[in-house]
Amino acid sequence: MTTRLLFVCLGNICRSPSAENIMNYLLEQQGLHSKISCDSAGTSSYHIGSSPDSRMAAAAKKRGINLVGSARQFTVSDFEAFDVILAMDDSNYRNILSLDPSGQYAHKVKLMCEFCQKYPDRDVPDPYYGGADGFDYVIDLLMDACGGLLQELGEE
Ligand code: 4NP
Image (cartoon, rainbow, N blue to C red; front, side, top):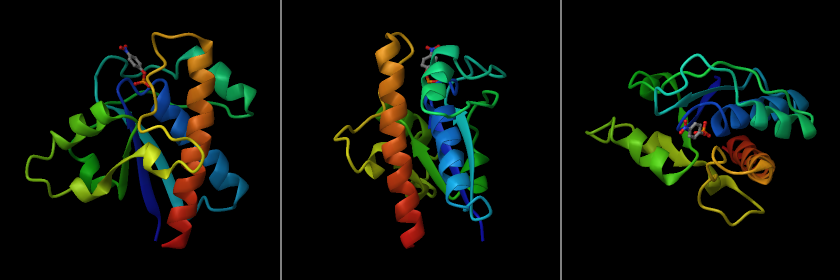
């Protein structure tokens, strides 16, 4: 059975499309595309239909990863459609859980940085209003977290 992953941030143009495309890159490398599928969404409606941010795409490209996709907003139907929902930061996490008042899907929602193996961060920092370094950092952090997540899924 395929495990369905959904990566979620605020705008779905920086962090979550990076996580989705990095994970697809790792799945391709490891021949696991048929076992795990990925998508991403934003909690906000700000950028619906937009391509990934060009600064984020440039940072990903430096690591050999092409960012593809079009932003969409997280919806309550995603709770059923996905097995694991990965919030990029604590604010995303709380916004997702607020859409599940009964808490029946809370077990599916995790903080992305729980899976980091090298970095001590709790959140994937929002790079949107910062400089180029912030975008590079997001890619490095997500490479670490995606690797850890893949390892954990492989052990289940
Ligand atoms: P993301 O970054 O949540 O990683 O896609 C952001 C994108 C847009 C905004 C904030 C964060 N914004 O305020 O428009």
